[in-house]
Image (cartoon, rainbow, N blue to C red):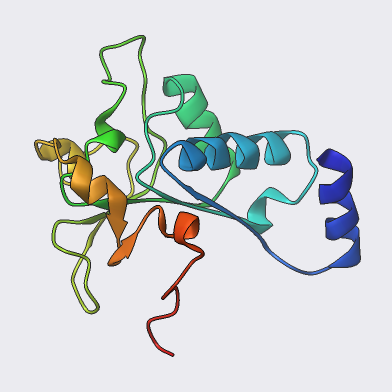
Length: 158
């Protein structure tokens, strides 16, 4: 995988690297972005990490590392999605890295969001009682498992 990544990087000079994922894929995206940045495989200031419904991945030292090396890092959370609350902070010191974009609504076009530029913030989803698995499956009115159905309807603007 590393060789394929480096081949693509070398064939596409000047591009930014977007790393994204949902749920477990979001956790993996966070780890991948951090690994790529710390191993200097790609300039950290050109890495764009954007995740959806990401669970907590590491402890405070991991969160501090991500915060210090990846300037463009956003965890998007849908209203009362239960997964970003897991594992709980009290369990082995799990802790989110920043920044959180919290949609405390249905995420339809034009809905407002709150940006919390902190690792864990009571102003965003940490301040809500997150217990909804259904909201974990829907981001921007797209069902998270739409790929299993052949990505039908992926572009609502066509």
